[in-house]
Image (cartoon, rainbow, N blue to C red; front, side, top):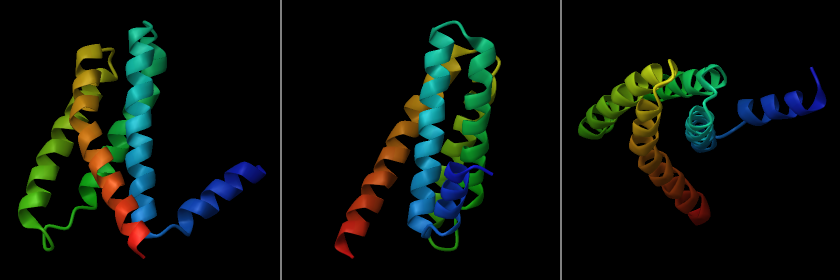
Length: 124
């Protein structure tokens, strides 16, 4: 394993829950945006990888929801995550409209959580 990979793996394995969430949100959003850009360039085959990985991350985010803590929020997020995953799966076949819909639905969630994490981290 090269030094950079070892560093990144250590960074992820030792991250706080908030930092882990931030990494997942940033990773999904950046992959969605990369997939959209590749589809806009007509590179369907190249777009499938980032879009599929984004869908995997969103599915993982859904699995981490804690309805015992916030049932209504978790129900709403679960529905959104399912919609986003469905659109990303469709986007991976080359559907630019579906890719853009997934990004439009996910970006406010990701950006909102990232802002909340940053604000919370600043108070500590």
